[in-house]
Amino acid sequence: MNDKIRSIVTHALTALLAAAVTFFVQDFSDFRNDKRAEQRAIVATQNSVAEELQKILVDMKEVANGERSSNPEDVEKLRLVLLKDRASAQQLASIVPASSSELDPFEKASVNLLKEAERLKGPLDAPRMTEALSEYLYRRGELIAAAENSRNSYLQF
Image 1 (cartoon, rainbow, N blue to C red):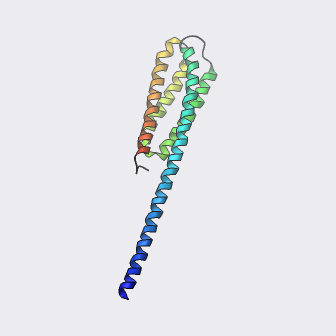
Image 2 (image 1 turned 90 degrees about the vertical axis):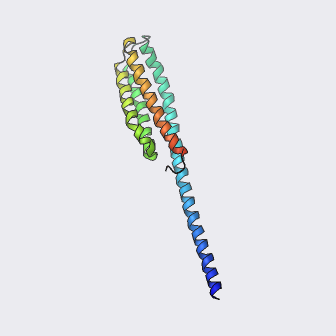
Image 3 (image 1 turned 45 degrees about the vertical axis):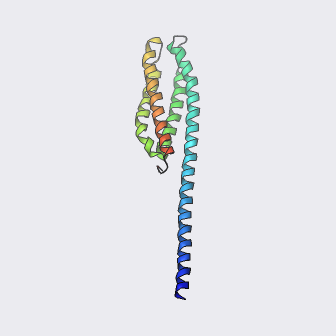
């Protein structure tokens, strides 16, 4: 009789342990899936920002080449796109802590790009604008790469 009770208790404890492990594994899996979905949404936002930015930069290129004069609407469009990009970068850094170290250099590059766009009046200002744009794109790429590397690691979250 004692062996029978011991067997029942052992089976019950095994079943409880299996249920607990299943619960925690499922919870972790759901958590990771939610984080990945958030990250995908942020990357989609960043991709749309990149498309908007490309359109604005075509106008800025015309100013830099001296084909037309600068106008405040172009700078305002750029400012709005950079704010949108900064917001998505901050959101990304909040859900992917490994990318937060890249946030500050990205924000500085973003501010510098906007300042140079405000100064852009013609071909003489083009080199500074090009340098600011290059730094911005580099820092943006570093931020996204840090998030991607983190997303690909299994237990990062």
